[in-house]
Image (cartoon, rainbow, N blue to C red; front, side):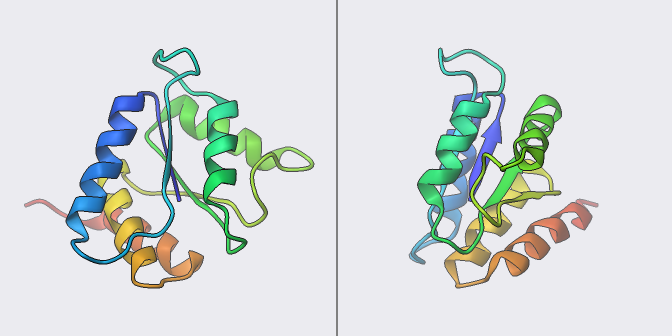
Length: 129
């Protein structure tokens, strides 16, 4: 799985929190693609592609984005022929933090890509009151 944010610090923090919340369960491969190559705020197709390739184990890669251009960049990478992302890479339609926790837990307990996507997308309906 890959967490894509406009900020490297945000992506790394969400990854750290997600990992901490699963306890002693061994997490699935996770990479972050935050900010631009020079450390600025934004998104980078290069960083996203490298992150996705680094976690690819041939079973698909869940890519969770924070907003705006992160989503557009991933959609663009998926739409290229050939795709710049690993075969089976899919964008996750879920809130960033809640989706990341769902992805981390579901993949750590052995969920396949469809189960991971479903768990993350279910997080969209979580009500806080």
